[in-house]
Image (cartoon, rainbow, N blue to C red):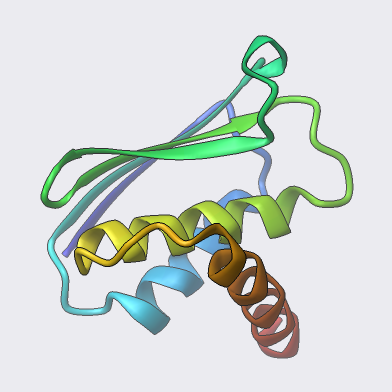
Length: 108
């Protein structure tokens, strides 16, 4: 079961998160909050924070342009890494971001 809250997010966030959860964490028990906010002071496009084993917060910079879905998939992959207790390898995540984007675009 997934409990997903989208706070101030674009309409595209819902389908992306739902697709990712069904594809990669279908049987997991999850609480996920995705929110858009101004992250310009932090100088990041987004980040994923683990609250507990199965509770996560993803924040995306409100000023993202065409790379919105890529950044969201990038942070969802970090969530997957956290959940499986894998290292947060940024190079691997950048590769996965492109693979995930291609796979998502083929399905939508």
